[in-house]
Length: 632
Ligand code: ZN
Image (tube, rainbow, N blue to C red):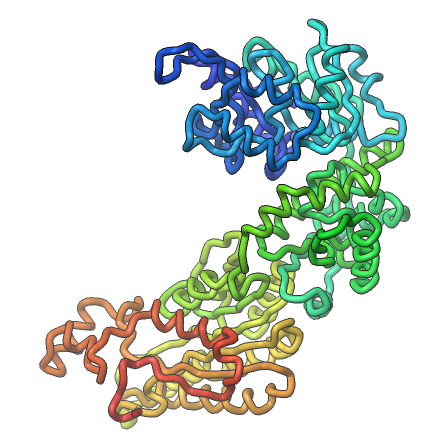
């Protein structure tokens, strides 16, 4: 591991920020929250009295991007009193830490704060280094062989007050000037020094020594192409959650190990992964067996009053599928993916130099059902309605399609967005460039979307074209056919392709077709458009009839005069308004309610029609036109 120290600042807190960011930039050191840092200083408080302060990383801040306000300033003297206590529940400890703050607005101090108090050095750095954890996850720990007497080894104890108690006793006997670091078994590494640079240099040296002992490693295996329905069927069993598939070479090589079922079920590399990955992954596809085992594990370890977490797997390993990671939101599935990729590396390295070993079931259970984590869950409240669900939207880059994407995401859905234009993917949005009239491209987009999120629960065909006004007497056949190809044929084809996925939607499939006011009230000059939207409305009605038995609801909205989309430039608006002898403002509101219909409003209606509010409704046509006397 490379030493990237740049410059030393006059203020030690700035040096601590620098060291934190350098550690945070290495995924092999800190992954999704593992690790924390501190610096001790003397400052003057508001009364002018000098106070010894510990600045320790606050929760909610990422080491990679932390800034000065991310450090919680605590009265060191008070903390030194706290570490003397024989016992202190972690929830009480957190309360005491908050009460020791010099700044009421500071973030919550790290739960590992007391470890930073026990180490007397000015600067203390802590990481969950993969390489160090690999050394500790051994039947015969290699820590002493690699580090000799330069480090203190602390046996595994759950982070929090108990760990501080155990560490305090060990430090009292063993902490001398020769010691440069502390290795926590199955957990990570602390280094320290008079300056952040000294602590950082030692951190890099110790991690590099572990990496050297483990040695280089590479693996390769080819991913297997699987029918996306196979993944959607697994997700159907699990319920409305996000299921992502991963087939990178290292993962494929791991899932094809002959001893997979043995090495992958010994437990996580470090206990704090358990919240994200559960204690063990599911090997193969028997979800029911995994649930039974989880319930048995809970029954064997739970104390009275504990409520069982959901028993669904978070990681599935299968020689053909590769790795599936599962989460309530796409972000959670991604965190499980990142953590398990590191776990794979740690297990493979540990097995190559010895035997991979994890902690006991009881130790792990204690972490999974930690009181602070339970309290957090209770506070979290009900998730957004579409959490764990997936919508496919066409025409997702602009206008009503884009508004639908936003409204669905606001309700917690992940979205597969298809469009001719490029759209940027995020954790809960997969942008796919595809022409809806290209059946093969749609097939590939669906496969890509299902590999990313696990299935399709909602479909919003919003891509459409509106050819310019043309009287029937002057119709151009190419334009007529193009209009029907995009507005009608493409949706019929999409319906055929998405039906098997909608049928597997855990909460029932839902479709909302974006048609037009022109269906009930056509206008002269819009023959192709009106005919295409009328045909797709009829298609939706037939789908409602055919798919009701599969639990799929199909409804249609008829928007009118949505002028805030790209189709309507100021120039076109002025022309149309002049044509009717109106101002642009009056032209936009020429409906019964005298209201302006917005794409955002149509998007919210569409999302609502996917919700349980419309749970009794299928085959309906809902106007979104401000009221039209030809429709009413
Ligand atoms: Zn830690």
